Length: 291
Image (cartoon, rainbow, N blue to C red; front, side, top):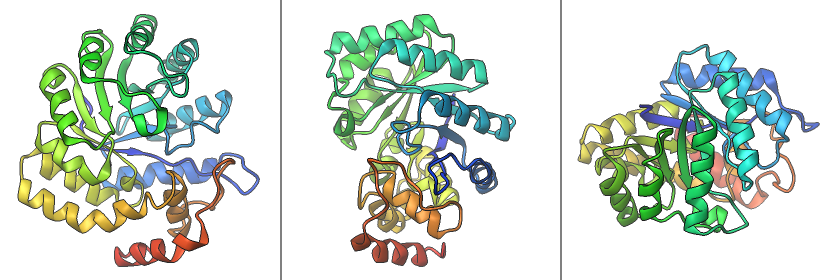
């Protein structure tokens, strides 16, 4: 079981829009050195929506090869087409990923039965650990706890990223499936609360810029040290907020640019952080000694 601070890693790009492979290698080494427990390659923060299939697989391959087994790699392989999700998941397995993260099919609004059959088909097709990813604010479909319980019975399903930020929902999911699969937070601001309820870690945006502190937060929360976890999370709240001043990954890519880890390049239809937010973000980065 993969546990702890799992960074949803940004994908560096050159000014011409190509993937910046040298900067990608540097980010991987940064996370390993700073105590990140696992990396998600090509998730939402990694701009999965704007990479083509060849690039998507090439990033997974590069992260796996650079990591060399030092920490587990989770490949983002979700799609709103079941056949495409199967193809990406199979390729991630072939490339040596340790598990896959499968976002609920977006835009086409499947029913709960459709969600079950989607994951059932992927689980039957590919022999690799599969983590469900429920983020209705971005996908326009909500995987209900009862559906999660059905899907958790499938042999390949090993976890769920519950990104609603709703703690009542988090408790429902943990009560239903927490003894069968890992339950991860996908909401940095409330992640410690989910882990105190019995969650197994946090798939994090903030960990891109503060990997050591996010690892520490996860260890405190998973150890049941509620007061210490809350105190650290309170300290981190300005950064959590700054990472979502605009749609992810716009702020985090600008932050990593200011920190010297990548160019500010981002692919349309996403744009670089608006001038209105830049001073506030730089102030938070300065507060944490990052610039």
